[in-house]
Image (cartoon, rainbow, N blue to C red; front, top):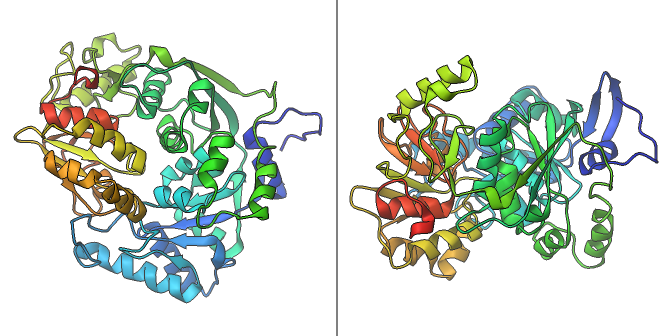
Amino acid sequence: MPVQTSSDKLALFDKIWNSHVVADLGDDWVLLHIDRHLLHDLSGARALEEIAQRGLTVRNPELAFATPDHAVSSAPGRNEATFAPGADLLRGLRRRSAETGIRFFDLGEDGQGIVHVMAPELGIVLPGTVLICGDSHTCTNGGVGALAFGVGSSELVHALATQTLRQRRPKRMRVRFEGTPGQGVGPKDLILHLIGRIGAAAGTGHAVEYAGSAIRALPIEGRLTICNLSIELGAKMGMVAPDDTTFEYLAGRRFAPSGAAFDCAVAAWRELPTDADAVFDREEVVDAADVSPTITWGTSPEQAIPIDAAIPDPDSAPDLVRREAWRNALDYMGLEPGRPIAGTPVDWVFIGSCTNSRLSDLREAAAMARGRHVASGVTAWVVPGSERVKRAAEAEGLDRVFTEAGFAWREPGCSMCVAANGERVPPGQRAVSTSNRNFVGRQGPGARTHLASPVMAVAAAVAGAIADVRRL
């Protein structure tokens, strides 16, 4: 690991990483202290089961937080048995959490929800902390200035048992979004534009810091959306430096410090932002004014285009590999090159996932849905990201706005994003989704997924086809 002196200009990543190194293992490998664990019903249940089978103990159960999200139904009035294949996972997570002393947020309880939604909203993840979960979208939590990343099953067991993890130091990448986005352009459009421009492998081996005036202008929930798709950029870590927006968001959160301790924490957090003149291994700059409402056309998040663009022709691909990938994607998606993406008929619309299921997402979607109605033949769902989001949305009447417009209002969970809970887009049908992955079969075998922002999803629902939200 490179030796750094006090005169070095450090990035946000360096400051958090360096302060958590327990031992230098050589060749850029370190033993890293872990501050928080998030556990869900898929990976978390298995990890705690292995802990028990191996006769191990959870080193610091007070630093771990568990909730079911992936394999639970989102049907109204659901219980743990509504989706029977997931019931054993939920019960196992509940039982092992109780046995080990881990805080468990059950169905219907304040705190239950998608792990990457409930962790920031409860103040479980804080600036300067290192947080892990057996889920690749753990990078979402970097939106509050944390170092958060997904881990594999053996890594999760090791970290639970030792509160440490062997990790290799990544390179550093900074993406600056500068300027003011245009009408209809939000955080989802910014990050899809970036991935479409530099590719889904551009961040491989890097920790990415998002910066610039457009990022500073975003509320925390928008920053969480940006960081969520870091893994789709190829990076397992995405971060935004904490600032006054962050501190105001965290004040009063259930597991955040309070009183004098909060003031002390803020003083420390103010030291975290990247030093002026810090050097990154790669830098990218995006002019936010150049970004249009964006949607994917293929089977990779990098296959993204402005809503007013035409579907690309594989013959125009820059190399043979992408030419073949584009052809395969068009074949799977049932699209023709050269035709406008706008106007493509849709069958399903899904608003939810750890990308876009927070209260601000639902407010924006409801504002677009108010006074309109879902087109005939379209099935449209709204799935809040947590019990707390659901209750807040209902208190504001957002649920009524959606139901009056013809959307189904569901219970908190991952739902159709991951299709591990029986909730799938039928084979061959087309969905506009606010989730993060449009891989082959991601939303069900044969499902055709277009990724977009919440307002673009509403536009598609009411038009019955992929539509430019700016024209509503």
